[in-house]
Length: 294
Image (cartoon, rainbow, N blue to C red; front, side, top):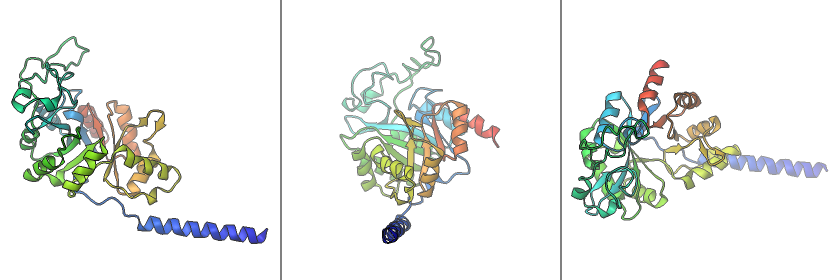
């Protein structure tokens, strides 16, 4: 029995030593200037869709006037290869048109009314309908707000826009002030290959291994392929965003940005967990909350 116990003890010690060595040899996420901030970042989701029509110049103008830290947006390409900002892959929900974004030339797309759908009172009023609000190009927005940080989500895989997005960021000298996101592994990998100097968040398949390792107290073994986890609090019934998740992410130098958080009580709860920023449709409420906590 003693020999067996000694053998088990040796095995435990060896395994522990291997895990410690592996953790020490696993590199954290690299540093990126994008994440430098003296407060948790207010990330205006689609420019703050709770306040203005999604992904429009008037939404971004309002967000900048409020004092947000980051403008979040969604990018697609037109049939003539212009990069444009719109959430869906069709124009049906947010404009007065119908059809896939990729099937429109830029000139055709910009004839549509991008303020058509927006309402703050369940459709009783539509204050931006017929007011000349249109779908902007990425170049227009990057030009209009050169001082801002940008969280840009790649919405399409085919045709690839990785190289053209990278070229746009380099042309505007914004590679230090951009964070690129996507739900599509192919799009994310293409962008990382094209633009390694720009920070990226991680797709679900990249977050899952961290979640499992961190749950069994082995988060230090995780090798992050990106620099941020942008996650909901729950994925189905799975409680993703917890204090342990945040601590484990920070142990790997990975930023944590919950989405999409519009209730000030939830914002306060996540701020108390130590998140690095919050993606919200109501940036006005988060700014008020941050000021109240100063």
